[in-house]
Amino acid sequence: MALSKQWGYLKRTTSAPEQNDIVQHTVLDEDFWRKSERVPKITKPIYKMLRFSNTDQPIIGEVYERMDTMLGSIKDILSNDPIVCDLIHELVVARLDKKNIPLHCLAYILVPKYYTNSGLSNPAPGGVRRRKPHVDFEVQKGYLETTEKMVVNWNEAAVIRLN
Image 1: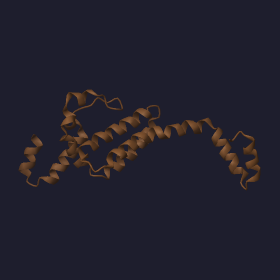
Image 2: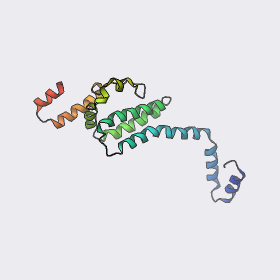
Image 3: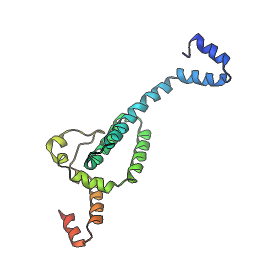
Image 4: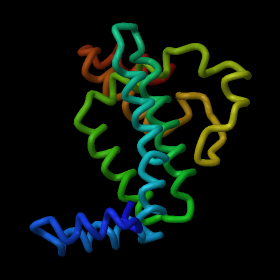
């Protein structure tokens, strides 16, 4: 449309022709279209995570793994742009820190499918090899924080920490 005769007519008849020039320049700009193609690619994993989380089903044990998968997918998509990747990662992690992540970590440890060979053999997004949940340092930390809050007797907490 920006190259048609109608555009010239619209440009002459509107009250803000300078805005028409900005629109025409933007529509014809290759960099604009390259960047606009990236937006749905980046937001797709986030959208999938939001759709997954928007349920009445018991999914708390799945949330931590799905968040890791989402971040790995974004890292794969932005592999050639580490600055934007780091920025998005920081924003997502900052948002996660506002939620009750220690409880998600405990629930993640208790889901049996993450300990099976079939679950561990599938590669994770981001080029990271999948590991058992209790091996992940962040998960261990969240698990220990949760047990400290739930178990008031220090002797019982020590037994839980050892096992």
